[in-house]
Amino acid sequence: MTTRNLMLNTRSETEALARRLAGLTRSGDAILLSGSLGAGKSVFARAFLRTLCNDPTLDVPSPTFTLVQSYDSPQGEVSHFDLWRLQGPEALEELGWDDARAGIVLVEWPERLEDLTPPDALHVTLKPRPVTGQDPDAEDQPREAVLTGWADRL
Image 1 (cartoon, rainbow, N blue to C red):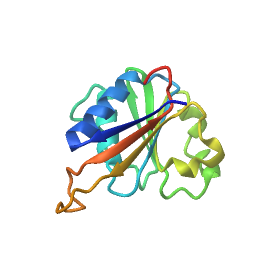
Image 2 (cartoon, one colour):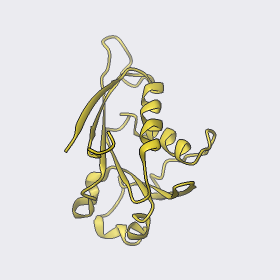
Image 3 (tube, one colour):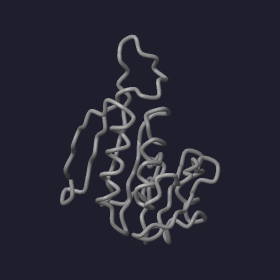
């Protein structure tokens, strides 16, 4: 399994990584996005989805309360899951997980997938790297991205 560590010094570098990975994504792919609250998952997801859908102004609300938000893209349907509030992997069936897997899935809080974690997924873990003297809640804080998977594409 391939693992790459990248330092992302700004929000725009996080967005650029998301855009690059969107360009490598194919129908049937799963991108699993991990990180603590405030790690940059929403920044990544927004840039990723806007790129896939060829719409730089696409409204990308967090699916925290709906649990899943679907988008049409040239590569097919893209489903953005936020599993923070999921009651267990069996609840994924009600959200259309099996059907969504035919397209592209972007999953925040993927540890809640448990046994349903796709073995060929790209795991993207974002870790904030606060700078001494910088507000830890700063929007543009550096972060590390750890990418695991997609040995044939990364």
